Image (cartoon, rainbow, N blue to C red; front, side, top):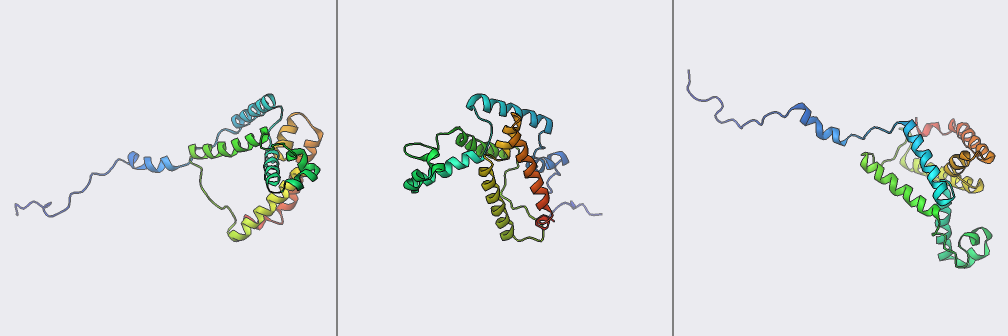
Length: 198
């Protein structure tokens, strides 16, 4: 038998970390679960009520975007803005369309969504699409759909939040007609664009 230590010449082996500690960093990167839909719906109702109480208007995104566009147009083409009744009402003369509650709500929605995404570990840049669709086609369809939705929202005097949520809360008949048209149109078109997701 040899008296030489069998561990001589071998590098020391670090002790194995407990499985719970090893899994902790991976778990810390996992997104937090979504809020209960009933709780989320209740909180949204409270926010809607506060919006009516504080600003005199409900929630809505397209109105804020319209005011931003009118502000840009009033800066680069003030004469055109003054001669078009729709834009003159928003940014004509000395009016400042940025000083509107809908713009503050739009900025708050973007910042609030970003903060919520960071806190819940869901904030990331990604492009969701079906496996048979190129990035260019997905982006093109997104811009086309967004443009049509934005145009429709202005014609309908509100978007899904302004008409559907805020208008529905005060039982406006036009808001219910708007939502039926939105969902009906979406279901009718879904069959033709399903390959974007499958």
